[in-house]
Amino acid sequence: MLQEIEHITNQLLMKFNQFMDELDAHIEARVQHVLDELEQVYEE
Image 1 (cartoon, helix red, strand yellow):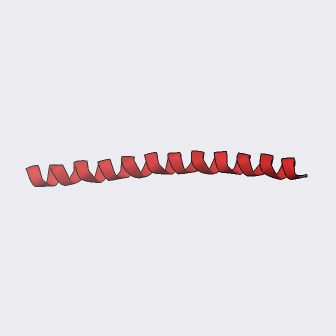
Image 2: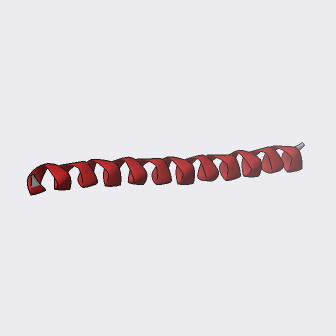
């Protein structure tokens, strides 16, 4: 029983970490996009 709980917890942690990594990459891409747009506005 305890091993099953540990196994499920580990799987959830792995999925959570994967999700956070994807979210981080997504946010980074959005921020970079906004910065690029701002740069274009200031250059004009």
